[in-house]
Image (cartoon, rainbow, N blue to C red; front, side, top):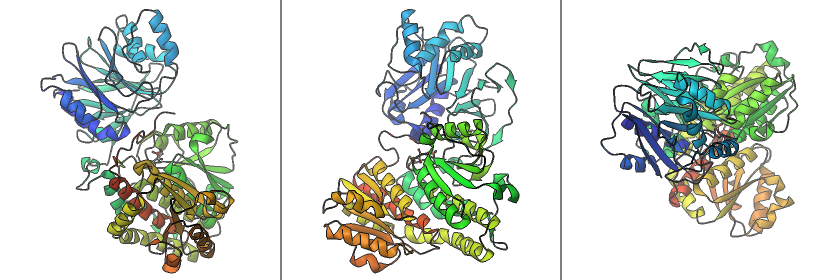
Length: 599
Ligand code: F6R
């Protein structure tokens, strides 16, 4: 909001947020009444539907990922009250929407859409006339709402303000020169301002062109210090690449270097991790490490658990945060909990962290997005510094998370029994990674060729042993989410206990075969697959498998504990080129959204 027309700013901001949801989009501006445009489809379709004369300095917009009601023009946000006075955009889920809707309908309210969000517009409209401020009307409406939300609300009768509120779904306010912004992600704001304020759960804010006020849920004003975000608008461009995904895969030599920057100590062979807020005595006091995260974050946590066990000899394991939070976990005072999230906003991970904190658990975070909800909730942690990840499929955040775990494992190891010589081996190995990733990226054209060859199969098996297993899981995840080829990951050791029945000429296997102590076992597995007529694409270190594999991608060798990080890179390229060959929407795969801020 401010002196400029809101619509172009909203459309530009929505395009930046499209990775968060993209089945429909809409905008409303306030200019002697509310003017609305909403369409099923992409932000580009909305831009075409917005007329040139769509004037007004105050507006809100939304790009949707359907939860209640199919993607359609009417189900797109903003949703308006029946008298067209109040407009709402909403991320999250109103869990008691059915009940609220029934009550409103009993009072004669006619609904236009199938969404849960529309109840919010009607609820605000019911009290907006009789309350002194829009803020109060929104607060009253939210009292009856159960669920999660990040909302922005307009009242046609109060054309100078926007009210935003947060509970479980991010809201960030951007402070401009005589203009104010709000969004669910800084990505939409960085073109206009770097000064931002994050709302906490339960907080509400009133924005006017000349400033803002924030309030706690009870109504008391809160004091917030603006934060300067260090992202450039250019981080959100494709930078000449055909897709964000390829850009983000290709950036990994730099992003990995940034995660390592200033954290490797060549003198004492330790890692500097000041953000952990833990002295050596406290670091020694933990008997276990429990890692939680969702999707690819969870798989990188499996690599992390392995690193911690190997380098620090502390028992460690990873579990999906989405499962952990629902099973009434036993929270142990001698365990250090580690929450992983690229976005820092994944609701399941955030809820798991909150549950841990309620039970007195010590939680640290490995997070990419600075100032995000999980980063604010944890007791300390490691920022990835990988820069914004825009493509829905996680790549550079995955490798940086695995590296953050290597640093953590080195740190724990060196306060326990990892010798300086062993510490040096890991420090040297980490320092080599950026150049080795570069070497793998140079194989891009050859990997693209292989992708085209394998993409004709409707299904693929991924196998790996111990260190290779999370790599196989991540490889399968990448392939299925962006190419829609069915992919299944199995520990290579488990193949003969069931899935070998599937193997045949029609189901190729991608085998992760590092040159470690399990090499011979892995080669035996390859033999078993080949004996059943299965094709094998091997990702590994040298050629001994060549006789047993149809195709081989060789990656440079690092230390065996760090090899999983390098073995992941060809799998990212394999998935990317398969998706391109199949003409998929690489950066915005169907049914998925970048940050899953709903349950
Ligand atoms: C896969 C992917 C997802 C995310 C998961 C967690 O490529 O992107 O599986 O890893 O939704 O997201 P964050 O890390 O933001 O918590």
